[in-house]
Structures are given as structure tokens and as C-alpha cells.
Length: 71
Image 1 (cartoon, rainbow, N blue to C red):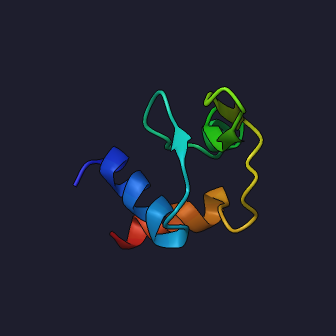
Image 2: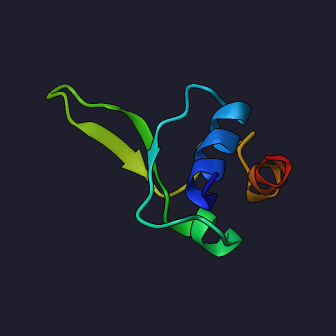
């Protein structure tokens, strides 16, 4: 399993309905905290709204990395 596959599996193991976009493998806390586009909703025109501020308190780098290390 690649690191990217581990990341997605770990993320979805913690929060199965999370939606986000990443540009590269997430292997550092800095990247996790600053570069993931987290889906926050859909506006009235059907356009996805997102933020780079993680809105999911249950998803921290520490928790995701620990889950990845189990895989």
C-alpha cells in the first residue's frame, strides 16, 4: 500500500464521510495543517465551498499519522 493510499484509508477510518482535496502525499504535519482543501459545503449554484482550515476536530495530524502507521 502506498503512503497516499494509507493516508486516505486512515482519514476515512477516522471520519468516513470526510471530503477533501490534496495535491501531494501528506507526510508532514505542516502540509496537513496548511494545504488540504476541506469541503465545507455547496453553494446555491452547486459550487463546492472549501477551506484550508481543518473544520473536523477529530481529524488531527497525530491521529491520522497514528492510523497510517497501523496500516
